[in-house]
Image 1 (cartoon, helix red, strand yellow):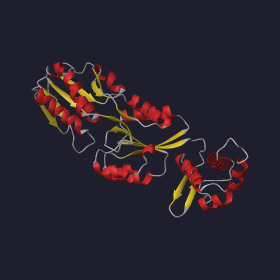
Image 2 (cartoon, rainbow, N blue to C red):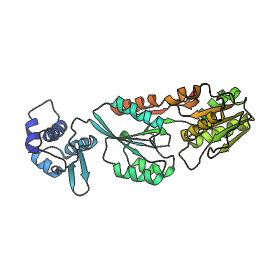
Image 3 (cartoon, rainbow, N blue to C red):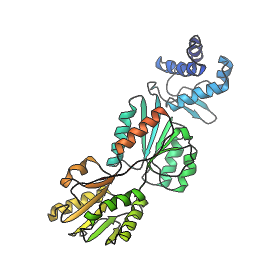
Image 4 (cartoon, rainbow, N blue to C red):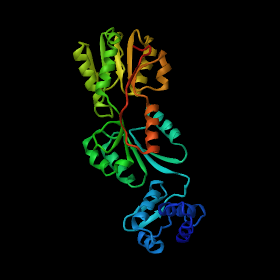
Length: 336
């Protein structure tokens, strides 16, 4: 039935042979002739029945794979795996975890792409083994891959297996060949610059404390920037792995990467009746709507995750190469 449907479309001169093949499959799915699990004719059969060039058929099957309608199984052929023909492209989004700022990215990204793009979300939790497993399992099943990578050299060979035109690196920068696109943050230089801007405020406190876990997904550039800042400006600074009860001290300022530690700290401030921005100073990494209002506002160093998501969505729709380091902003509020 599929062959007959494609042959019917050959009468339309406005359609290329590639479009005839793709539309033939789409119409066959919509009309119920093809269902999930059905096997498509082999490339050899299509060549013989239709007289089309082999590369034309391969290209059409690949286009159907990018829309998430078809999967190829090694040594078995091509199979229908979805009947959602209104989807233009299937996109894999691989993130660290569903933290507030990454949720903000996802919501904006989904809104900007619209309903014709299907987005499947995965999380690797900064674990190289999990990252490798996910990328291996999803490779070849999506039209585009939007990936926030683990910053580890081990993942680069795996990412190179995805064609440059199908991969967009977001959030954390990792050095890939020139053909690959990225929309990434730069942590060390930008964090240092923003700390220098805050020097008058930080200098009002007796001690400046950064909470940094080297066993978590914290950007090491922030640690390097902090150490450079306290050395260059004679700041009494120290790095602690975790915030614990009893660490809250008057006339100390605190720099949080983890929101979990930040919420615990603010709870202790409230219980101790300390005034944020006077008794203690607070600086946080990554902005969100809660930090805009809580305790009169928390000062943050952050990129605009909505802007990153909008730029990423535009790249997916237009397909052009992009290599962008997103600017970081110092958002001064009342906390320091």
